[in-house]
Length: 116
Image (cartoon, rainbow, N blue to C red; front, side, top):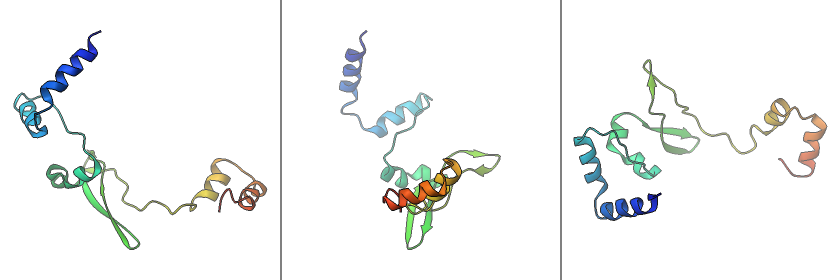
């Protein structure tokens, strides 16, 4: 009922407070909290770096810095550390094996330049 008023009040009180100050108070009060980062900020975050969440994936001539899955279960971090497939690499597999399209249909899609 008073959601907008409450949000306005909270925003007004927090407007001039730095994020670090908010998290310091939350930590002192033992309130679980974590920031929502943009990718560039996450890749530079000291905590993420210290937890080995940041990795480099080598893709042909490019090195891509990325964030891994932070969860570790039984000592294993379940993250993919491979390059994304090139566009079209899996198209035929998906069309044939997952969508069960016949060869003639796939050929027609190629002919009409729907797929390469």
